[in-house]
Image 1 (cartoon, rainbow, N blue to C red):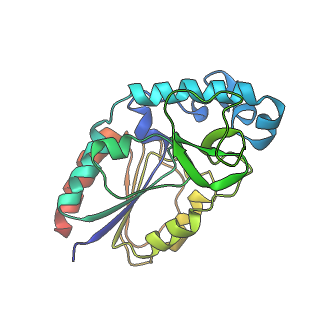
Image 2 (cartoon, rainbow, N blue to C red):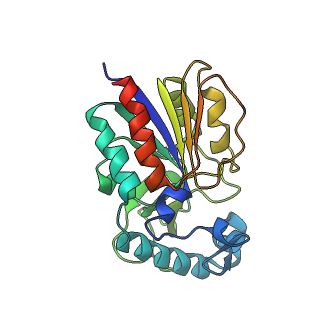
Image 3 (tube, one colour):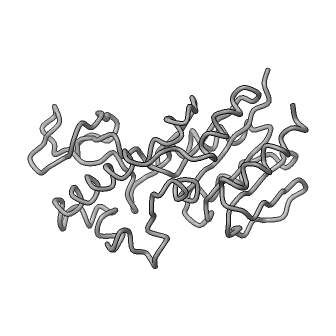
Length: 229
């Protein structure tokens, strides 16, 4: 049995691949008020704006490439049972080679009907108004917007509770419910937090802080993991 390494990743790991987030500039995401493009109210007010916004973000994701942090996590699968829980909507972990990736907030390369949030479809091209699913509902990005339920948080909490080692990479730990996942880590489990601006973390017996960007911090993290092989 391999040691189980559970990793929570956030926007900081994808930022080094050139993907911007709304946290880069006072709640603005590529110049848009985030609540106008990432909330049910924004969708109701201007669905075309929302679809156009995500069509452009999808192109950004497809043009981006996994960086050394994504690749480093994928390589750890040779030694550890790696489970990745990501707040990111891109597919950079998968393209880097990670096999077990749980997307808490959805995936930008998938779409779903407004009438059914349990069934998703792969996206080919853009989504436009008038594109409908088999149930007749308008298609929208399969993204969990602000104000919507994060259904996969239950699966994520179960994964975290089974960790032998837990790591947090590139997240501010201020967006809930993802930030609350630390509460499910057993008190004896080593926790590594890697970010260029370290978030506030409740002190614990085996807490290791690496104040570096994800790509640089991954080097230190992998060196530390050598003790667990």
